[in-house]
Length: 401
Ligand SMILES: [Zn+2]
Picture 1 (cartoon, rainbow, N blue to C red):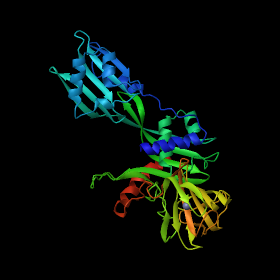
Picture 2: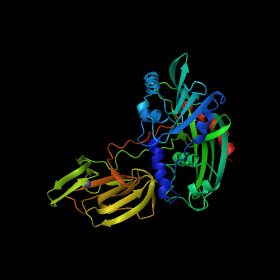
Picture 3: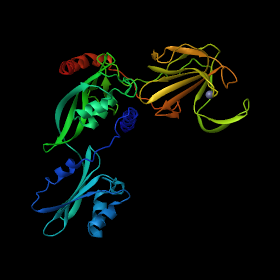
Picture 4: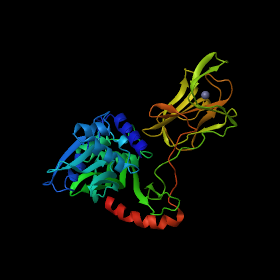
């Protein structure tokens, strides 16, 4: 999910929205002070500075070295204090009378915290799942410029907006596909601790009307954990996964004539040295070339830098693909294409020594190796669970209406 969030952040930036800034979560720490009665204890809340180690932090607050060592020992095998992260915070609670450290709480992440308590003279460490109280929130609106701007104008937590964009990352192009008047509505969890709002949780149901087209997504988990993995994800009303994988190959090829290299290679035919951030599929002249995914054609024509006849397709805010050396181009700029649609024919135009397809995948502006791309799974709701799924989403669909 982290990788996806980064992708989505990029989408939002690309959309020309305000620079995204992850707000530091103060309320979680405030809550911790209520675990120990305030009257007896003095609390010290430390936000970790970049480069500061745990021992530097404890030294700064005047903790005896022996206590620091005791904390290190107590947390061994529970959590490695060497990996405390800048920007996160640690709460220390001292006995007001004796000055002895009674409790330490470190928020490992939004899901877990490390607590170390002084129990009968010894520190005991524990890693705990943070239990939030969950409230459901339904929000929606119509888009003037970007989803981000619209949602923010309504006071929706930006992290919830990012989660929403994540749900539809494969279905909607938030960078270029958004139209004025598009509407959205979604229901998500709000996480509270001791009555105070902390952060958004899971987006449970969402509807986006994009250019007149209705796209719906529902979070669904069948609750089974048979092979160690929980089956969960976002699905459309028909139970198809919202994460759409690309076709494995854009062409029925004979063999791969050149793999992906980031270093330079010498091409004797043209007396040039160049890296090859692409896959070359050797195939017969005229073999149909297929779009690996749904998208919009952003380039279709001659490329004078060696690519010959080339087509570029933008799939979403993250991915685009390029198809070079074509003998014939069958699409036009601006055209929407579907996964598997024939967009052209294999040729040897441009810098090419024989018929092949030079295929590139561009992720956030960087050419990546198509053969090692870790794409999301496309598994849909299985037939035996379809009935349960359809019943489950009825309620959410009604709520979205
Ligand atoms: Zn090539």
